[in-house]
Amino acid sequence: QVQLVQSGAEVKMPGASLKLSCKASGYTFTSFAMHWVRQAPGQSLEWMGRINGGSGNTKYSQNFQDRVTLTWDTSAKIAYMELSSLGSGDTAIYFCARALSMTVVALPGHWGQGTLVTVSS
Amino acid sequence: DIQMTQSPSTLSASIGDRVTITCRASQNINIWLAWFQQKPGKAPELLVYMASTLQSGVPSRFSGSGSGTEFTLTINSLRPDDFATYYCQQYLSHHVTFGQGTTLEIK
Image 1 (cartoon, chains in turn purple, orange):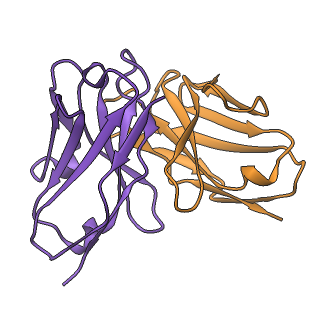
Image 2 (cartoon, rainbow over the protein chains, first blue to last red):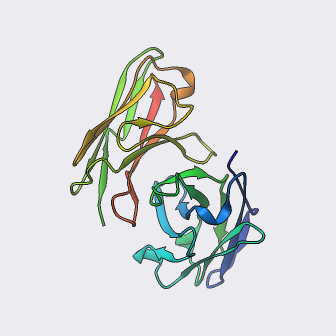
Image 3 (cartoon, chains in turn cyan, yellow):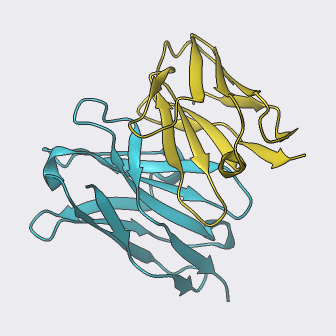
């Protein structure tokens, strides 16, 4: 079955950068898009971007356009999310989520357990 | 961006009740609407997609309906496990957006 295991919690200083990982198993890794979504404490969900299956092309939210980079290591079946210039507003749980299907790429259907990121001096 | 607005924000109900949550989109999204359930400390879980298609393994007491700009999630015969927060999400646009959430509480 689809399994997404994310890296552990992180504490970062303001202005620092962050790189989170999401290890996938149970499916053909490069056939499905991978989304990243975050959730600030007590808030709703915010889509950050996705890396498309096959091509590895990326689409980013305008809210993060200049700060986020999505990549993947196809041999290791790991997706990465890098976020730069961290501020206190970036304190959140970050989720990776695989697209529901190869055709419905825009719907994150299978989610990792989340990684808590705290930005604090 | 397409804005998604849920109502109510909080809903109190009892075991066995039938409840309905509404989600409105700021523009026509056809049927590109999903519903998620999230419990405290857990990742969201997909319940419904294409407005009314139940994800595999989701109990039949959950149902979704609607198209265009107005959608509903109905839960029949509430069970203790159903008390959680529910989010709608549009995926017409590649920039997917979520509603603000509806917290279902035990009365």
